[in-house]
Length: 221
Length: 266
Image (cartoon, rainbow over all chains, first blue to last red; front, side, top):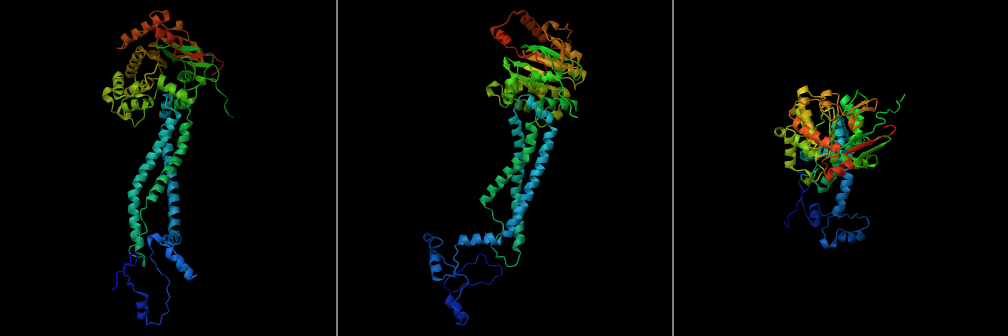
């Protein structure tokens, strides 16, 4: 034995071994031609991802040289297209329903408080202040839901990960759901957009509220 | 077919002086509330002039009018319009947002005002835990939060029983006696009689009471506020006679609380 090889993405029941080309040729009877589907080359960090690859590409024009990052990108674009599409569709549907629900909730809430809002305006609350109050309510609802969604999303991701990893041939150390800080940023941005869009209609009601007519209607009604 | 424009108030000339105690009476739909809303700078007349301490309100922006209302005018409504999620102290605190701390946005100021309206013990109660009279007291405290010079009340006792209504009327008398001009729209003759001036409206026009010499004869007041009310009346009488005015008060009289000058139609 001349070394220890690690196969982090091997299947749980895989019988994989590492050897040199000479020993592989000897094991195969010595008649096999020196062919390979994939050649993995470790290069110095200073050489950069294309350091060795450039030389190989010159040596054999049919070689496709990929760095680790390029290989992962290709895999993400090709191998996860289906997951990405499902994720986009689910996100769009969820956000649309969230916007509709919060808009309805805020509109009902605002309509029930028209008298109070008109009274506050009469007492000197500016148009912007009552608008800001409605926007704050929207942000609180969406923010509360967003915070709650983080642990729920983590639990759901862990459950789905377990289910997907039961598919035969999936390497043991492959995870379908991995936390990335950029995902959190996208999450926050989507929540902020949801809060603003959901509040637009109730804000319009509040901003255009005729104070005197509303007070009169509330007393008569 | 669309309804045409309605003339709610027309040919009105009215002046509210600092410390005035005015009732506006008249049948439903005669323009009382519209006039009150104009005095409160909530509505502006389509023609004519509306002055508040010398400033033409019709030329102010919505934001400027909001600031004017916030700092100088208080409103009390028939249906209280308290925010259900806020306590009595919270209502008062919310009304002072936007006002500098030195001008009364302090815990001490909140407590004092609730004591003034007799609700210190109920400061932490929400509207659902208060009676009608207590809710109106909270509404009065909210209206007084920024120490306005003019308090407008639209049927303040309309939702209350007779006894509670008298207590609220006594509180309003006290507010007026302490120097706040008070304009009340009411159908209640007993409440109107407590005022030093009663203005009667019909079909959008003032029938009587626009001028000080139209003041009605006084009715006896049988409540605890009679002493302070007497002081207010004496002060008003001195003011009418031009005696005892301080230089500051003379300046204020030169720029009265609110003036509505005649116009063709509002």
